Amino acid sequence: MSSVAWPRSGLWATARRWAAVRPWLTVEQLACMASLYFSVVFNLAYWRAVVATGSLHGAGGALTGVSMFLAITALHALLLGVLLNRWTVKPLLALLLVGTAAAAYFASAYTVFLDADMVRNVLHTDTKESRELFAPGMVGWVMLTGVVPAVALWRVRIVRRPLARAVWQRAAWMAGVAAVAVVALLLSFQNVSALMRNHKELRYLIAPGNYLVSLAQVTLEDHAGAQRPRAPIGLDAKVVGRPAGAKPRLLVLVVGETVRAQNWGLNGYARQTTPQLAALAPLNFADVTACGSATEVSLPCMFSPWGRADYDKDRIKHSQSLLHVLDHAGIATLWRDNQTGCKGVCEGLPFESFEHGTVPGDCTTDGCMDDVLLSGLMDKVDRLPRDAVVVLHQLGNHGPSYYERYPQSFRRFTPTCDTSELGDCSSQQVINAYDNSILHTDDFLAKAIRQLAAHKDRDTALVYVSDHGESLGEKGLFLHGVPYAIAPDTQIKVPMMMWMSAGMAASRGIDLACMRARTQQPASHDNLFHSVLGLLQVRTREYDPGRDLFKGCVMSKA
Image (cartoon, rainbow, N blue to C red; front, side, top):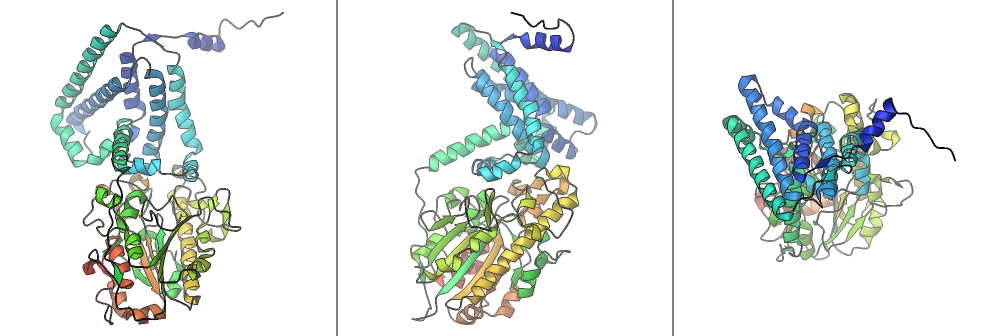
C-alpha cells in the first residue's frame, strides 16, 4: 500500500503548519481580540460617518478618534465579558462574527442604521425580500470577514481554570476593561460628548453593539406586549347623514411602497413617470410627509388616529386601527396584500395575501407583480352587501432590486441597474430602474381607477399614498429606514392622490375646485384616518375634523 508524501517545504507545507496550530487562549483574551477586530474591520461605516462630521480634524480631532477607538473596543470587550464563558465562547462568538459581518456590509453599502425599528424590519422581512439582499458582494464579504475567522476560532483551545480563579480573574479583567473605557472617554470627553449629542444616530452604526442592543429592545418590547390585547377605539362609530336606500360606496385605499415624492410625475418631476394618471387628472397632493421612514413605523401610524403629531409607538401598536373603526360603523373591510402583511392594522379582519400567489400572468415562483391585487377584486366587492373599504398593499418600489418590480414592457428609462448591489451601478442607472417601477405603479393605479369607473353599482373612490420614500445614493444613502429625526426628505416625502367617481362627488357634495386648491397645501399621513372617516360620513369621538382633508370642501350637510 503506497502512501502520499506531502511536500515539506513551500506554500502547501506552510499552510499545513498554520493549520496545525491550535493556540491556548482564555475567554478574556478572545474577547479582547474579537473587540479589536470589530473596531478595525466592522465599523468602517461608523468611522466614515464620524469623519464626515469634521470631528476628527486637527490634533484635537486625532485625540478624539483615539479616544473613541479605545472606548468602543473596551465597551465591546466589556459586553463580550458579560456574554461569553468557556462553554459559549466559540458558538456565540462565531455567530457574532458572521452576523456582524452582514450588519457591517449593509451599514457600509447602504448606510443602514440598525436602531430598534430597523431591526424589527429585518426580523419581519420575508424570504423573498431576504433573498434579494444576498448579493455576491455581500456573500464574499461575509465569507471573508465573518466565516473564515469563525472557522479559525474553532481551532482555539480554551484555557480551563478552577471556578474560583476564573471568577476573580474575570471580575478583575472586567474592572480593568471598564477603567480603560472610562479613561479613553475622559481623554476627549467634551469632543466625544458633543459629537454623540449632536449626532445621536451614529451609535446605530457601531457594530455589533448597535444590533445587539436594538435586538434586546425589540425582544423586550415584543415580549411585554405579546399577551396584551389591542385597545378598542371608535366603538361609538356610526355612519350619519346617509338617506335610506342610498347607493353603496366603495373606497379603494392603495398603500404604495417606497415611492418618493421627488420622482412622482404628478408633482412636476422632470420625467413624466405618471402619464396615465396625468390623463385622468386626479387630486394630487404635492407636499405630503410620511409618519415614518420604514413600513414598520409608517403603516400602523397612518392608520391610527394619532399619527406623527401625537406619536406614541406603544399606544399605536396596541390599539385598533382605522379599519376596526370602519368595521364598528358597519362598513365592510378587506386587506389584499402583496407585501409582508398589514403590521397589525387589519388584525382580526378579512385579509388576503399574495405572497405565494399563483395567478397566471401576474405571479412566478419569485413572487407577484402588483397587478395581482386587482385580480378578481370586483367579484370580491360584489359579494359585499354594504359600503366597503378595500386596502391594496403594494410591493411597489421595494428595493434594492428595483429592476424586478416591473415587466420588461415598462423598461423605458435606460440603461437600468439590473442588480441588487446598487453601489455597482451608476446613479443614473439606479434612478432609471426606480423610475420604471413608478411607471408600473402608474399603470396599476390607472387600471384600478378604470375598474372603479366601470363599476356602476356603487359610488366609488380611490386614495393612493406611499408608506415612505427612498434614498437613491444621495449623500451616500441608499434604501430607507434612517431614524426619523435625521431622515432626509427623499425618505419621508411621499406622493398622495385621490380619485372619485361623479356619483361619489355628487352624493358627498364635494367641491372639486375647492379640493384642488387644498392639494397645494401641506398634508401628511396624519390626515388619512380622519379624511377616510370624513369621506364615508363616519362619526366617532376619534374623528378630528381639523385633520380631515375634505372638511371645508363639502357643500352638503354630513
